[in-house]
Image (cartoon, rainbow, N blue to C red; front, side, top):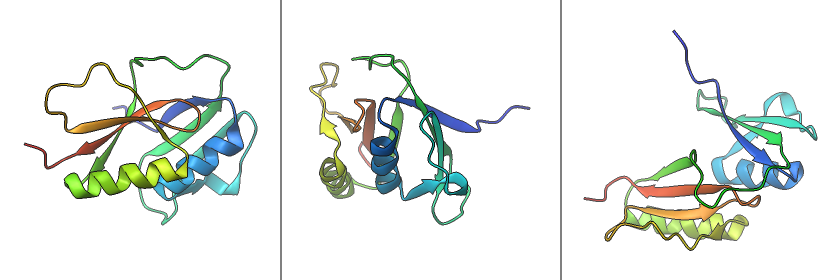
Length: 124
């Protein structure tokens, strides 16, 4: 049986990406290693959360990526607070043209332009 070991994001500026995702998720580099070509982030508390691997890439960011991260927030107020926090860390809003009429998600881009969503898990 297979299990997911890591989610991988392509990045052009490793230190900037490590700083953003470490602060966004309260993750740290595995074994304290930050390398130019590859860095794996793990939960700072030593828990069993999903690893986030950052790999150097020269490939341009897709406007409508086929794969992205969904970050969960418990309610609309928590979602708004997390969006504000992530924007303060260097994320930026994405002018998403595929929003439904009453979305439960907000699309942002990380410091490298990778799209991700902040989801209100209590949205009807």
